[in-house]
Length: 297
Image (cartoon, rainbow, N blue to C red; front, side, top):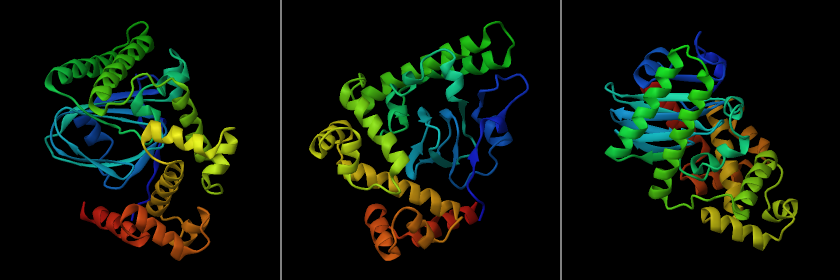
């Protein structure tokens, strides 16, 4: 079984492209870059993908989404994905580093877009025909601009991708009924909570520990998580642990019991029961399914 990799920006650099940016048609990208991504992998950059023709599935952080014309996806650095697409798939793709976006805008601005805000927000938007035309035109301009050596090229590309994100936000807000204005204090605190989990999930599991780090009561932390994503603080912590467990299982660098131990579970039987309760299958069943998928491609 092939190991899952973290794909880095420099693996995609074209000779005329800015060093922190990549754009292509999806059909060319699939031929030249992604002959085989049957298994999940992740990136160290922000990614936007628009499907104009074709069908299939796109799995992001182990959630499966249907691909059809008008499907638009935005992925954060570190999110895992893979896809199985029909041969007639067409569309556009671009990605960029945090540093590229920060040339023009403050870094906090990216997190204001709901699809980049949290791993608990969906990365998927289904566009109607009118919005698909608008966004297709923007993706096409991004690609055209990236292939031409005109003055202020980076600034122009940044302005275009920001328009893609704003159009994405408008459609996302309409489709997901999430508050567009997510700069209020609950959202800010929720983001900090998720960052703390990212740094401490292997050793700290209790909502009280995180509430203490956030200088608030457990009750108030739960109020925030329920308001933002309709889940308890405990659910948010375990969701992150299970996502890391899935990534580690796919990587297969350690045995299943070692993975459980590295995530803070000394009793593998308990870890396996918890994994099944949260995901519907045991760690070994989960691994077997991905091995099967890899061999079937």
